[in-house]
Length: 589
Image (cartoon, rainbow, N blue to C red):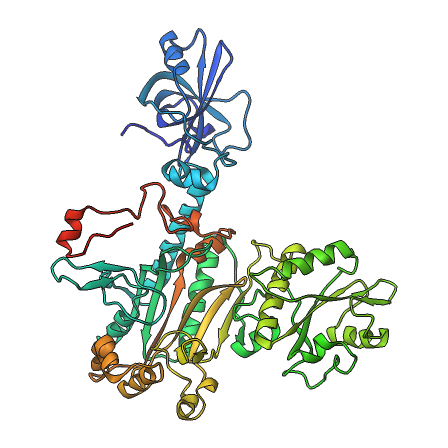
């Protein structure tokens, strides 16, 4: 070994020991007669000391030739520091150097290898191997390691078996786009990279492996954002001989175990909410329940009271839904702030046509942007309905039900952020249940599976498959933490006839269903047990535990928003010889 200790290991209890450290030069401070070097590895930083008259002159020569990120080996005696650094675990000691060896010189890095770096995202991604030396990124990957480790501890304790499933599989038409891989030995035919191991884990249940899990890489060729990558990791799980309640209890246990083992937090029992209730109260199937500001309707399908019509305000009269939130303590917002909020919600990505406000002033008076149409008595009625108090601000949107709820959901989250109610160190978990089984695509003029084609309807809703498809509920569930869906799953169809019926509803011909999923339906005829499962977005889960918005720092080598790895310059073209081997024609730019 080129070291006896790491750079984060030595303490005062090691005083007068001889130690050898190896690492990277963080900083050099040369005061003439005294020279200090901060030596860094992934465990920490130790200060090296060279003193005139006590350190050999040739060591000073070596030390003064060093630059940032030189790889260095230093041997010396551990001594107590005269000027201690309380911010470092090793801050009570330093290593008085007796030998120094440059293991490898280094070019000056393109950005500072420090917690607060001067490198932008693009530069850091190009030199990701340097970015990984920084403490925040290292800590993120250490957290990811602990999350994976503790997942395996819990799953092993619950008698699950970890099974690897294939990476080269068959392309399927449902869901996101597949990444495809040409087969050299089967010209003109392609593998697909798995979007999930869904069918394989169901086949494992047919095989009698009644408790399976896998921390598995999955792939989707879709547009990217902060919490999405073309390749991502799932904690993929399946169980046999279970009902929904068994799944919820088992994997609520996993989440509570992770919070306790990784964060030291004792999580309460996870509350539950139906999809319909979540949409009504928050306009989202993944509501952030760290704060209130629940929706209040003053006209709409869920309220028998219409408190807006007949006053001459055509916008409300024509609206299907008039709905708002109460922002506590915001009556002081100026007209400029309200105009800025209005502009924010009218942005194309949100698409609201406008925003109505009602100030409930501290003196009890009410002032709104629709005073021309509504009296103070009208506004007082709204305030009572909203549960508003003096000092509060009511923000109201109107329009088509689905659009208005989505727009108000975005406004609610924005107000939660502006009011400091979305603390990343506070965690609010929620099960969302009873999703619609199907959703109708107007453009394609057909039904789509809300989750995937293998999700079972609620047993009591199976008759609705013949009478009212839109009313049928899925035996499905999502786990939401702080407004982010971190896991989703369902009880599966395990009967061939019901699975064939589902494929028919989704527009598959018998031939298409057989070609795509005949292997699964055939397997159902050989004694498939009732089964269900869930998959957690592992990268998202790690970023939530780390208090970050982006998953990138929790992935060692992530892609950028264009799906590119700018460090290795991938994807890239391949040679004509390779194309010829694959029987693929020349691709012209």
